[in-house]
Image (cartoon, rainbow, N blue to C red):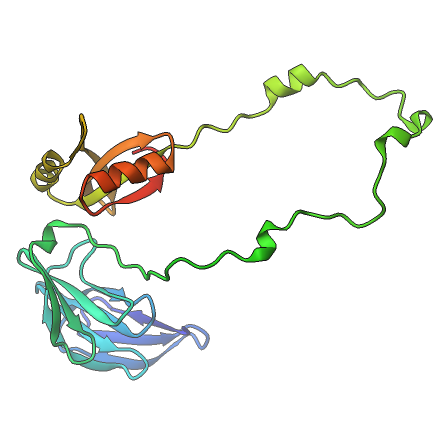
Length: 248
């Protein structure tokens, strides 16, 4: 995209700057001061945050048309434009998804505002290319190591100490797998969920991490030595889960 969208101090709209011409080519008048902008990853819409308001102004890019305004809190994760063109909004305890063109609500996730939201597009599993499993072949005639001319070897070469080389060679740490059930913004909800998950004598636990300045409470089990073991624990938990490589 050649355009950049700029909010100037004290301005009541958005300047559209052509980064190749290095000049303002158009202006989107919103009639109010703007505290921040958030771009649709696919370049269809621009979300503007009016100063002092819990709302988002939706602008259609390409035509610079102001579609309208939607009520929402502004957080590190919300609002955002999903891959299907829906606008995800934080309204009270719920997350609402509205159509980006009509602004009509299309879905509601009750108590969803307690979670941390991250948009991504799932493309599904793809078949592995057969060429990836073909052995590597090198051009030229095959070499018989029993017929090498020992007189052509460099007599000044230092003999290799295979034991020393093995000791100096880096070793790859064993891979582990962790079962993850949820990533929440509320510690009490994470603890409540963890208390409900138990497989045999093992229970889920809560670990914390930080993203965009927000503390995330992740409900996990593991790590386990193999993916098969992690998948078994996930299935036996009777909960929604996913398995990732590495420790918590």
